[in-house]
Length: 167
Image 1 (cartoon, rainbow, N blue to C red):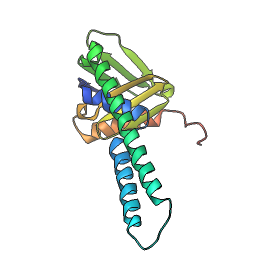
Image 2: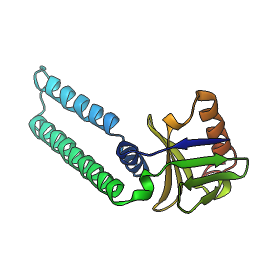
Image 3: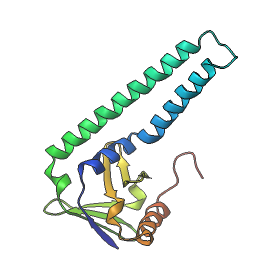
């Protein structure tokens, strides 16, 4: 089976955030809920003397994390602009042994399922992690239907060795 796609800057940003384990919407929601809960607690009859400190600390950590996310996004956009290969039409073809990634006019890469360390995904991309610093993003929009997307997931997950510590 095969799909064709062209990556865009948002795909690269989403893949980078996913690779390092950042989920902006989830994190922002958790920080907002934490600050709201602490603020609600501050007007309740139950008092804690360090509550203002907790509110300030939580808000500061949230702001710091948003700054980090912004920097990752800026770096991803710069990488996208710098690397023309990322903007080329690409074909991902898979079978029972692995996936072949072939950007137009560039080097073809074959990833065996047994060599792939991890498969991650979010609402935008599927990320194939080969090792530290080596990954390939396939946008979910490249799959014409859910059946083909599920077939790719099954192929990728079904042939990998179990993660360390799992049986």
